Image (cartoon, rainbow, N blue to C red; front, top):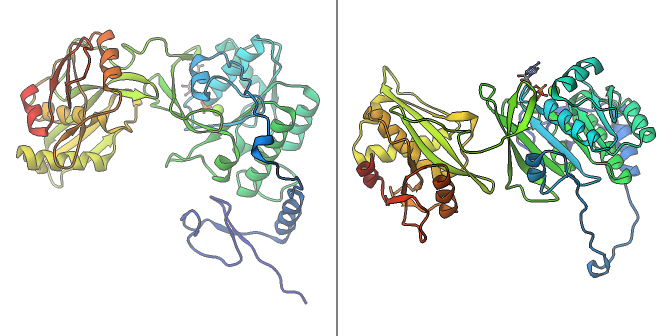
Length: 447
Ligand SMILES: Nc1ncnc2c1ncn2[C@@H]1O[C@H](COP(=O)(O)OP(=O)(O)O)[C@@H](O)[C@H]1O
Ligand SMILES: [Mg+2]
């Protein structure tokens, strides 16, 4: 009798091995390998044989380059993140935590496109057609060109697309759709791979742009298989704080544009709107409280003013350090530096840092503002509400230059700021009074 073949597959990245191991050697996740049954192995053999192509290679000089034809989504911010608009035949994945507004955004975009005369299909495996209709009414997205399909079976969805002649499709969400041909549970690697492959085939062969919604896990990656991120053309993440009405749409991967741009939206009762003016969105106070400091970050190509807050209080027991929107390791580094350079007894204090508006700071130019906020809270002395702190702090206590300083300062000037503490004097006049602080010891002078 022939020996039975066994295959184990990682449910996170799709890695396959004949023997079970506790930790996936490909993506390092624990206990993610699952044994495939005989039916699944047969399916795997079948599909891998099917995908072999026989095309001849062509010299690159013989290939005609094509200009990408994009069309607007009706939302300036989404167009910006996509690199100038929607590319026909592209597959885009939008990830975000539950309730952040993924369905709202895409239903609104679907409505915009329907208004422009495109025939649009919105497939939902999560909500009934009447629920979506209710949301559509609230968003002003009811147009006869917008078709709703509450369906979780991929075969029926493919059939509808085949017969519908649509020019834009939304799939809400990938984790709920299953293909009956695939012998696995919805959300598993095999299912997601099969469905994404099918959607990709439809998108490319019919030149229809398809937007897929994906849920994300607590750790912040798209829930379920990572294979999804590799297969699609564009991956966007929707982030923000459910307590604030601000949402950021960030590019993570884009085959048709840069991933540097960030879309900024506001959530209100009529849905998501492009954020109008950046000034006063993140910060609009006459007076700051002790513990608050302002800085200006680059979100994509746009500078935005943000407020960082610190709370420094005597510790009872082990001192606690906690951050929202900022890296805790980086905070620890800054605190160590303050202790060493300024002789502050911070080891006996609890220290909390928060970035206002649900923004996550990913650049180091906010270091100086974090230090300013900590010192301000420690000394119970408020900072001037028209002063910005800009600079990266190095391990030696030097304050280093940041990219696009002049652009930041010019934007700050138009928003009514008058003073900035910067690492070096800018080479041109930006309208702001600039004070140079090139070491941590120096900033005490400006507090
Ligand atoms: N009737 C309503 N009026 C105002 N806001 C609403 C209403 N219904 C839902 N929302 C808001 O819309 C947000 C986004 O929901 P949704 O787009 O379904 O998120 P997701 O698809 O990302 O899970 C919800 O968090 C909720 O705050
Ligand atoms: Mg939803």
